[in-house]
Length: 90
Image 1 (cartoon, rainbow, N blue to C red):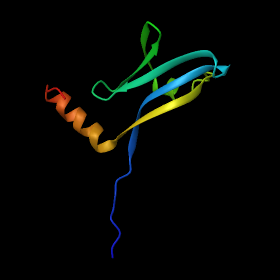
Image 2: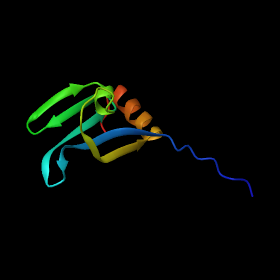
Image 3: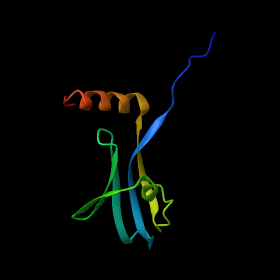
Image 4: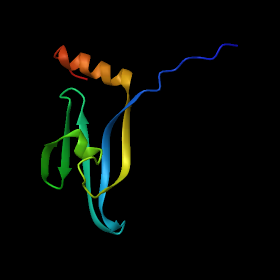
């Protein structure tokens, strides 16, 4: 029986991170990727700012620990982009 071929490519679209040395203390923030805008947004309490992907991936030297990670299948990312480019809503 031939094996089925599956595309298992996913895109990181969200991260909840923790600053601090223990889970009962410190500070939680989140970074969310907007597929349609092709931008990352950093949410820190009431402050929202655009950030580079390198900041989210920890390549910029920030000291925080990823706590929860959210992924979206590549095919769904492509569908979201197509709908938004056509001016539609999901």
